[in-house]
Length: 182
Image (cartoon, rainbow, N blue to C red):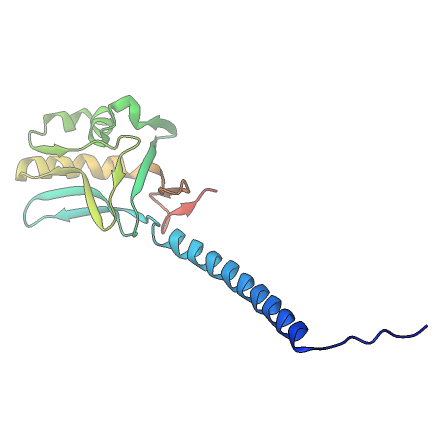
């Protein structure tokens, strides 16, 4: 059998070169699209942490959620565990202070408490601080600390939230940072 000789003329070389360049361009385009997708994912990532502030000099105590991420965090649920029983913050109109008050009625006597809800669907913007509650007067501060020290020993909490790309996260009182659920 005779081998067929390929006739390499300038048209054939130019055509193969154009096809090769097109294929390489396609591979680069797919790679860049993948990189852009990863960058978009990282550019909207929320990172929540719970923060307490105990200022004895000014007689104030506050509890807040801070979003250190670059994207909004959307609250899905808040669950509490106290003395072995699990509670949902919905049962307390989404107010954490209402829950604490139900566990220790001495907190009912506090007159100056700034209180905010943790409603599901609430978005916490990036680089922001959302205050859950704050006790601000000397008498209320001292009464609150006495009760809170006892409550805190048996209290654990879990906040589930999501990013705008529907990735789900959870933070616990004993975790070092958010844990991805998906």
